[in-house]
Length: 312
Image (cartoon, rainbow, N blue to C red; front, side, top):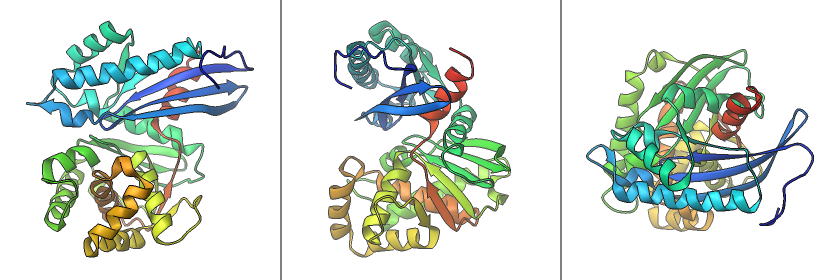
């Protein structure tokens, strides 16, 4: 696909924009028959959680969101794509001025933003991964910048879905005074995740050996894991015990480990360790032994559930 190209290929073309707490993403899909294919993916690290002041998204944060969305609007126009949908997660859900931010974004960009509840985000994330990962029973986890979604499932069906208001970016901002977390900060991040799990309805008692993880934190962790343990790039299976070993390697030699992160995931240097701590805390808490990382997630779930199934 090149800018200015009229997208009149076989099938329907959809644009899905995910307005997240750390990153804002545009995914363009082609739907032909029962097949859906990703054509283009663009990501901008906006770090909107860092623009929350006194519980509200600041003026600078709203402007940052509008700037990125305007850029994505231009891409959609260049490709002449008229079917597009924008949703927001914790970036707008967990602030006190949600309605104002949504209104300002609509006035500036023309986009109407669908703000998902935590449970909706969890369920849509599960829907997005279950078609790509062949796992009947387990726990779905999506660690975002401002929240973590959990869904226990059995026989391919959700038993319960919840959202915790802690993510890789907001726990970094609350607990890390510098750029990289030290041992004390990692302890605080783990304690915060454990505290939120205890608040959830029955999740502290969930026991699942198999975990399915999606989202930027999980994908970045997979890259780091495969590099450190010299596994094939395409490997998607992580062992919880080795994830602990990976965090131990960071604690022992943070400088060398940081260089590896800069090489592999430069845009997540500051948030990856907090995200990994959350992931391991969730996995250990439910007795998880294996973590399968999916490249699909909430955007695919939104496309299937909110667009395709409704015949829009």
